[in-house]
Every structure is written in structure tokens, then in C-alpha cells.
Image (cartoon, rainbow, N blue to C red):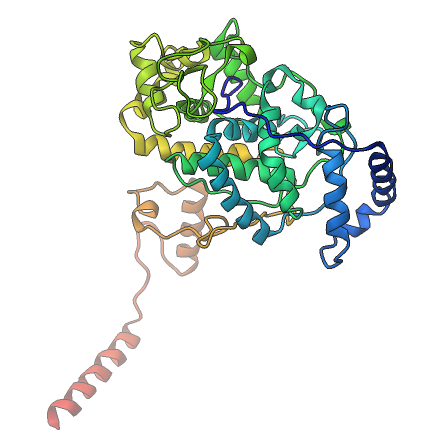
Length: 420
């Protein structure tokens, strides 16, 4: 959601880049961009990873003026599975020291949430393609503060050059949910990055916190992504994490008794008391609205006002297991929106992958009671029956001779065994 903010605003030191380094990097970028389509991130060369890593520090990091560069990054195919696993462990350590769960969730959401199902071409359709690393998109109003998330993840990206930004953003988002006590997200990876800022989506595709008609606005935005009412409500439940900071979103108090002492940098207003714990408290607190120190945005309140939204919000408020199940499915779906995968089916980095597994057979699922045959099937069966000599009013003729032979054979066998 647009107002989900990070639990820390400490910025990592920004590296400065000399003019000579910048010009050298620019020449490298030009030379490699012409051959990147054929190279496709050749990992067998010992030199290329160092060159790519050197490029990215100037392309994605800060320049000597302190501004993010908008040069294109070299095109690279799917992420390396082993590097993704290692990056996940580094993200877990980052979460332990910075308490940045909420802002990493928001980063993944906002990269994927620009998807438009009505646009077929990639990357014009938006979605999880790593475009949020570019300055032009970071400056969108809904992305206020997300530069801090990028700064937190950039050292991990530098360390694992074989991981795309698109995969890293979604990996960080899912890992943050899981490490906060939430459900296991059935993720897949292999997302391809966009190559330059000219491929970023236009501003205005992400949801607002206080639109004139909250229910219509939520449906306009999320239906455009191909999501439904249940998924809208389930995803809203992620507001159980994080705080809204008025200096970023214009919503919330500067601090409350739940946020004045951190963890992380103090301040902001949270939706729940334990705003670093993922559970169903959000739905309980929004329903009760008894604590003035807990935030309720118009897009939160509408979940218990709109009849369709309310059906799911009420269910999640009393049954955390149902919420976790629906949330995990919705989060995974959101993380795949608009992405171009290499390989096309994506891949899992879990020991027991949830993707591509055959459905377990459950007899009850396929035996749900009497089913009426279609008229066409009835006619086909009748034609076959009549072809054998039967009619609806007359059974098939019995072959008496064959029956007699069978009876004699059975009697002979019985006589043989009884005689012995």
C-alpha cells in the first residue's frame, strides 16, 4: 500500500564517484550495451562479473553530486539460484539489525503494483521488473522514502551480481513477511530487469491512502492488476506491519506511545501495537477503532464498510489461519505481476518447492455427488446401446449358448477339484 513505510530511516553512506571513473564507466556501458543481447550475462568469464559490478555501482548508486544515476544497466538473464539463497540469508541478517521489514515489503509491492493487465507488451505493462531502482520512478509521490530501502539492499546487490533487482526486491519483500512471523510465501524467481529509466511506468498507477471514494479507488487500482476483492482485503492486512510517517505520506501522527522509542528510528503512527509482528491484529484493530494512537486510513476503514470487502475482513479478524493462507496466495500473485521470467516458468529456491508440483489426488474433490449427464452425452450412449441391439424398452439380447458353455465349464472345474 502507498502508506506502508519502513521501520528505519537511517541512510547508508553514499559512495562518491570521481569524474574519471564516471567517464570510464560510461565507455564500458556503451561497449557492453551493444553486445548484451548476445552475451546475456555470461557467468563463465572471470572478468565479466567484476566489470558488471563496477558498472552497477555507478549506474545504480549515487554520483558525486549525491543524485541517483539514470544510466541503463547491462541486460542480464535469470538470477542465479545459489546467489538468491545466499542473498536471502543476508536479508535475514539485515532485518535483525535494522528492523526494516515494513519498508522492504513496500518496496516489493510498489515495484510489482504498477502492472496493467490491459497492456500486453513487456515492460510497458509495468509490474515486477526492477524499474523502481531508477531515480525517475523513486520520485513518484507514492514511492516517498523508498530510496532508503534501495540503499539498504544495494550492498547485497553489489555482493550478488547474479541476482536481478526484480528478484531481489521480491525476495526481500517475502522474506520480511516470513521473518516477522507471517506465512511462507510460495515464491518463484527468474524475473528479468528492465534496462533503463525510459522503461519506467508513468506516475499514478499505485493506490492513494485517502481518495474521495476509497472502495472505488481500491477496485480501480487492483482490478487493473487483475486482483479481486478477496485479494485486496488480504493484501491490506500487511498494514499490520509498519508505520505511516506524515513527512512522507501526509498521513499519521509524528509519533505515538507505540513508536516514540523505535525500534529503528522513532516516530510515525502504526496500524497495530506490535507493528513488527505479522498477524491478524490489523483487522481486529480496524474493526474496533478504540485506540486513537493506532492509524485508520480511509482505505482501511472501507474494508468494514463495503459489503464485499467486509465479508473477508470479518473472516480474517477472527481466523488468522484463513488470513495467512489467503495472504500468502495473494502476495505470491502480486509478486509475479507483469514479470518476464527466464526460464519462462520461473524456479523455486526452496528445498520443497511449491511451484510446478502435481496436485495431490483427493477422492472427495472428484466425487462430490450425483451429476446430470449432458443431453449430448445421453444421445451418444443411447446410440451405442442401440448399435448393440438394445432399445430403451428392451434389454440387450442374451447369448444363451455362450452362457451354457460358461456354466458347463465352471461345473467341470468344480468337479475336478472336488474329485481330487
